[in-house]
Length: 461
Image (cartoon, rainbow, N blue to C red):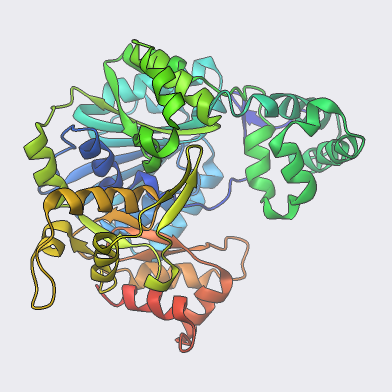
């Protein structure tokens, strides 16, 4: 039985419900500012689009928490669009539209020009025709000064998983049954072969993951990751060249730590890369040093370069959010370059200041009755480091009501469309387990530090 597909893409098993925080406008703006590029102007209304939106959870949460924006989600699976529309209706989100269309059709529809276009994962799951239509859509609808987020399976880190994907695809499609049954059969074969120490699979990180911790993966994710014929990890040079043809230039990475060579590369690696003059070739060689397996690239069209003074001014006007309770913050992180420590008075001051809720950096810098003012250079350096470690996130300075949105999320607890995220008033969402969602729904947060902290953040609307 052939797996049902739409132009090479799996259609009979829905994808997982997921929220991608890196696609939020404030996050993408931050990437641009770190690179010294002006992000889109968002005074008044702005436009945002998700190409390959799945169930539309990211688009829905962002629309609800950015009522001044106009949001669109596009996906080739009608089942995804149906569930997205139902959820948006339940959550009472008026500023979002979903469209059932593949990239071929979407490129010919009538949309507004977009300040932001995001596309999570699908670039390396579809074939050449779909990628050309995907690019044609971006070329037609991305505004000058607009940002594109594109994430994709990357080389060289996914090279070891190529034999696994080819095997799962070949075995699965040779068996009867629906695609979920075909995947189950194929993974059974994989597990037995890993047990027999087949060299091509033993070296695959993903083969070992599905063998040892397969219960961690939703079948919907595995189906869309491996049961597509066009699965093809890409080198950064290929993606950059593909988008350069429509005038897009790389701005940075939404994986914030990867914007800083000194955080991810040792001295010898940095010296070796310095000998490569071409920026794209250098970036590809950099991926070899860190064994890159998944990129979150941000591109800009006709971006305006900022001088250092303006860049710093805008960063100081940015708002940040503490991503966990103060007691859970670790003033260090491990990278390919080793263990980075940033346990100092300024970093701790920033964390303590953000414990009271999201704040602008400029406000944190102001002196108080107990603390002197913090030099801007020290404030920025420590905030960017905390951001790279994901201890703090760039968020919105405004607040939106999320009560009805989160009620719709909690209503689905235990159901077939359960959502494991919780929206925050500052324009993002947190991963949330069933226990946390149940506690928050029932108002039973006493005695649990994390639940109480989340409840505090929700009440700051």
